[in-house]
Structures are given as structure tokens and as C-alpha cells.
Length: 247
Image 1 (cartoon, helix red, strand yellow):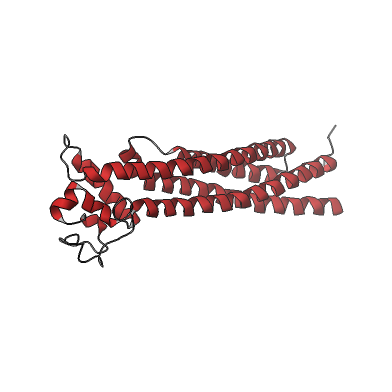
Image 2: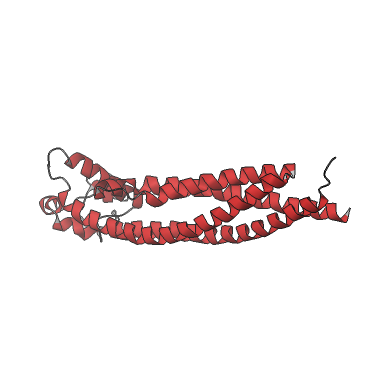
């Protein structure tokens, strides 16, 4: 009876851990999709993909989700073979997670550099006709400025160094807090209705917040995995001790 109580306790613990793994897997998928959607415009401006980490987060999130589903089934059935497979999967994903954390750190520095270079090169081309590309360029810059509530690369004065700014003494409408027909005009005299912080800083802050969240939850998940690995080992041992072969 005491042995069976131990199995039940381990079973409950593993169920709780697998529910946590399910949540973490869904969170990684959501985070990967969010980062991809928000950084997609800057990747178009840069002319190169910076979707490495979002793709990795999506893949790892899906793997963790299905690992948790498999783990719940293995625990429920009290199947020794399935539990051994689950234990191996947890160990493998633990090392994958460590690799992903290192990859994210490298990727973060790459994204900062890409954002700065792309905006500094793209903003001067705003409203310049270049074989019909100006419409796409303007759309991407406007999308970034509206999305991140920013203006210019470093700050709103970047626009006064461009052909567009010098000719109109204005910033794009996408810089405005409340967008109206002439909200970007004569901003050198009135900046109350525009975002003054540059997009490089706002995007870097957004990325740092998301990556800090990923790092924090990743550490928590890694700790839960260590507990899960140890608990799974004890559970397998208990099942083996209680197993009575039929003849």
C-alpha cells in the first residue's frame, strides 16, 4: 500500500509538470510568432531574413508541447517503455534549450545591428521614386513607426536631414500620436503630437523585454525539467519494482 501511495504521488507530480510543459510550449509558439510578425518589416528593409530565432522558438515550442502530451499519456498508462522514451526526450530537449538560449543571445546582438543599419539606410530614401520601390519602402517605414510608436532612426530630427524633411519641414504622418491630415507638418515648432523617440531604441527595448521574458521562463522551465527528469527516473524505478510479470 505504501509503495502504491508513492507511485500516486509521483504520478500527480509528473501530471503537474507536464501541464507546465504544455503551457511553456504554447508560450514559445506564441512568442516565436509574435517576434516574427513584429520583426518582419525590418527584415524586408534589411533585405535579409532575421527570422532565425522565431523559427527556432516555434519548433522548440511544438516539440515541448508534443513531449508533454506524450508524457501525460505515458504517466496515465503507467507504461515503463513510454516513460523511458519520455525521460530521454526531456533530457534531449533540456540540452536543446541550453543551445537555444545561447543562440538567442547571439541573435539579439545581430538584430540590434540590423535594425540600426537598415533604418539609417532606408529613411533617406523615403518618398524618393526609385523604380516604383518608394511605395513599398514608405509602407514598411510607416508600419514600423506606427507599430513601435517611434519616429526616425535615433529620434524625430532624423527626418530633417532627409530630402523629404527638408522639402516639407515635416515628419511622416506615421510619426504622429493622433494621425490627422497635417499632423506631421511644421513639427520643428510643435512636437506635442508626435513620437519623438527613435525606432532603433523602441525596437531594441521591445526585443530586450521579450528576450528577457524568454530567458526568465526558460530558466524556470529548465529547473522544472530537472525536477521532471529526476521524478521520471523515480517513477520508472517504482513501476519496475512493482511490476509482476505474468507467466
